[in-house]
Image (cartoon, rainbow, N blue to C red; front, side, top):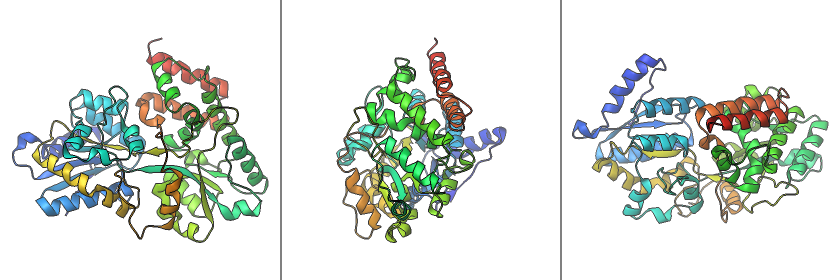
Length: 426
């Protein structure tokens, strides 16, 4: 049986607990009988379900057991991950964001070159190319993290509500706003969003720069070679968040709703539009089968050249392997993962990052969504993965104020550009 351990959040006890738990995975401890794991998961979501199947199968083969620490909230997870990196207490396997966090783990020698290992195993070329693109290190182009899954993101919309008012899925952001206004005028909640979670509003801020620049704006902004004040697509993203928030297009109290709340609100029957993705297909199954739900991709920005990819594809929170504790048993586990991971993903209800056929018996929506992104050429770029924790916190706070009308677009731009200038010593 897989063991599940939760550590106290009290700092003093935390450091003691971490030392005891992670000691079982050290190469210096002799014959290994446990593998330690840190995941950004609730213990019931697709992340846990995928890895639990892998670990349970590996335990059945080898007798090696797994000890988990599970943290569901992304912001809390980021803080805990940073603590473990800085205190040199990373477990054998850990969820890691591609960017500052993976850079920090790599700098301590605690991040394995997964690409090299998978190439040696003969499994790397079977990975989806967009997923690999998402996880490539910005400095050397190497994929250090194993993908969690192939996630596609898109907008769900209530087909019955749209039909009631003669609406079509929007293809541009101006059409999106126009649709929202019609819905609002008729007493509907146009858009449901989990505004309490940093990444949800950040998606809306980044949609337009992504469609227009892919990763150019965010990477150049981080480097200090571009800014909101000079980039028309980035400014349009700011205006979008402001318009959706102050136009009352989001549900009432959206900044108090986290992602789980938002999912429950929308699939509970409130709201006409919700941005989610393939991880929510199980939630959407019943409404889709009843003909009450459809999907549409990220709209394009009027008057700008948009890239052809309009369905964000990403790998979730990448999975790092601790190079310091990587031994023959861990290599055996990675070989097991390469062989069985795709099947485990489909059992958990998510697309496999390995290019294997979608099995029979999946939800119909699973098959119907796939053509939207099967020819995608570029991956999604998650701003919340690329920014350091302090900058992300500043951005998230400013986004909420922008959406609530407490901060003007001009002040938001000035504030965020000043933050990057400060980070770059200017």
